[in-house]
Amino acid sequence: MFIQTQATPNPATLKFLPGMEVISGAPLDFRNESEAGKSPLVSALFAIDGITGVFLGSDFISVTKGDSDWGHVKPAVLGTIMDHFLSGNPVLEDEAQFDDDNEDEFFDPKDSETVEVIKELLNTRVRPAVAMDGGDIIFKGFKDGIVFLKMQGACSGCPSSTATLKNGIENLLRHFVPGVEEVQQI
Figure 1 (cartoon, rainbow, N blue to C red):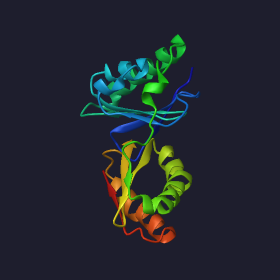
Figure 2: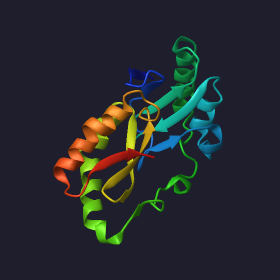
Figure 3: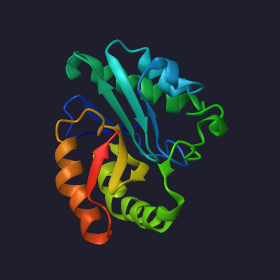
């Protein structure tokens, strides 16, 4: 098994590509070991000293480290990912527990058409580009012309995330969606 690695704009995060599907469905972001739930892979990655975040995409795993050096952490991450996939164990024991039904979104029902356009633009133009960098951006709400987004994976804590939000996403949404004035990170 050959696992490729890619740098991300976030120097604390590396993207690992095992060459096969990691998960089906929505990406999942784990910010600590207690959030790992029933994911043997995520639990094993958090067992490595210095790991502070794991993000699962459809065909990649983004791993975020703390103050540790990648020279020490990367071989352990590669070994853990390889061992997991060679074992045949599932990445998620119970996918249903990870279903995201958007229950924490907030917006006025009268803005539902605007929200649909915002989500469509995020899904077709923003999320694919951000996934290439090992992260994701999730719509959380819309109120008084402000779009609220959650950064995940490599995007969370990335030094360039503010520029991505303000110069990229905010300009895109303001151009295509009347009523959008600002984008803020939650």
